[in-house]
Image (cartoon, rainbow, N blue to C red; front, side):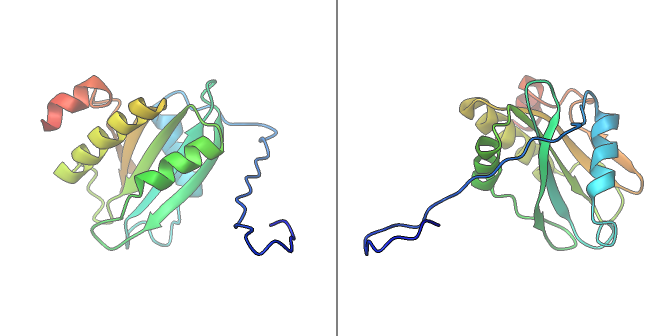
Length: 159
């Protein structure tokens, strides 16, 4: 924050971004799953739900990642404003989200379908692309993209 003697000065938001030297390219669900596995908090994966986001540029290179929330045994809160603020902040063009099911079962819940539908719609409205949503558990994953449930398809699944 800038030092000022102005009693009306407001808090300053500062954004710092350093480009990765050797960025990783994500082209499919297996690569996304491998990336998430490498960053996931392994001590919590079977205890609490966590929600992570990978932000990508137009070349599908990972710009950065963020664990957005560590929740309970059965849910994690998703703050869409934070997802898109971070996406704008790092100049992402797309993103991939993932969360774990501590039970180990990777079949998506109705809430997972609804979240995917909402993220897809808001992303499209704001100029981003949700590439995939992974549900992770027991050394396996479910990919909404590979099941054709991202984009226009997901709108039909939960309607």
